[in-house]
Image (tube, rainbow, N blue to C red; front, side):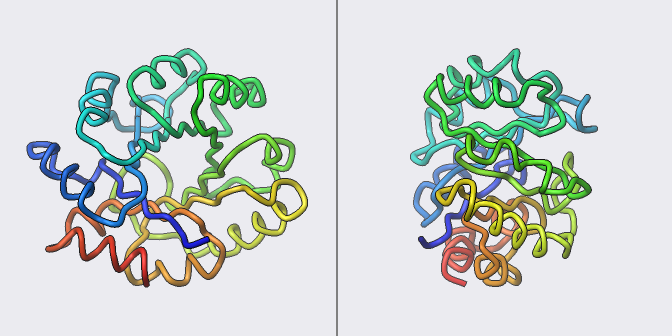
Length: 216
C-alpha cells in the first residue's frame, strides 16, 4: 500500500481556512488532520466542535481528528457529530482504553491510539489488536513547527514487528516534523500515514508539496 498523506490544519492560515481546505481538496492528500487541544493535557488550545463542523462542510476528504485532551471519553459522540471520520486518543488519557476504542468504533469511526515520544511502544501491545491505527508522535504534542525526533525510526520498526503478530492490517501514522526531506525514509521505515503541517501550508505551492510527500 502506498502511504497516505494527511495535511495538518493546525498550520493553515485561519484567516483563509476555507481557501486552504479547498487547496488540499484539489491535491493528492488523503485525509485532513485536525488537532484538538484543550490547554490542559497540552499547553495550547485549538479547534472546537463548531470549527470542525465548518471544516467538514467544505472538506472533500475524511477528517482525521487527533484528541490531545483530558477525559476524551466525555466527547467521543460530540466529535462524531461534528464530522470526525477517524478519531485518535492518547494512551495516557484513557484509563479504560479498550472501552474507549470500542466506543469510537461503535460510533462508526476508525479508532486510533496515540503515543508520545517518551513512551515505549511496548505499552500498546494489549490494545494493538483492537485499533485501526497507531499515531506515533515524532515531536512532543502541543505545538506545530517542531523538529522531528530521530528515534522515531526505531519506534516505527518496533511497532511494525509487533503488528505482524497482533494486527497485520494496522496503519502506522507519524505526526511531527514530517517534510519532503524525511518523507521517503519514513515511508521506507514502514509509516503508512504522514501528517505534515508547516511543510505543506508554509510552502509556496502546497499542492506540489503534497505530491512530493506522496511520491518522495
